[in-house]
Image (tube, rainbow, N blue to C red; front, side, top):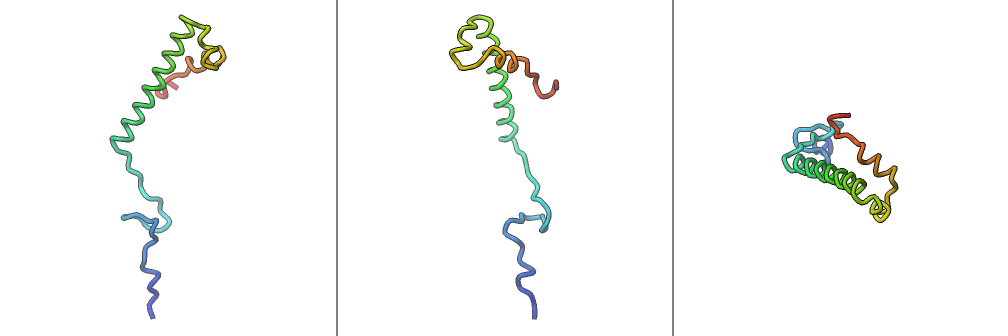
Length: 82
């Protein structure tokens, strides 16, 4: 008598993996572009905060931030300089 359940792979296991192994993730060009877009957006946000805090500091209160929060955000370094 054969065990027909033993040869069936688990549905969550992808091609090329065995039970107990995590499937390999592939990061493509779309993921890279999304990461770059997020990085640029955050850089632009920090640059805008710096400019607003220098030119019109009263606007910082209007957007709901404290001066300390703005200074902390401006002081953040890019990930490769940490």
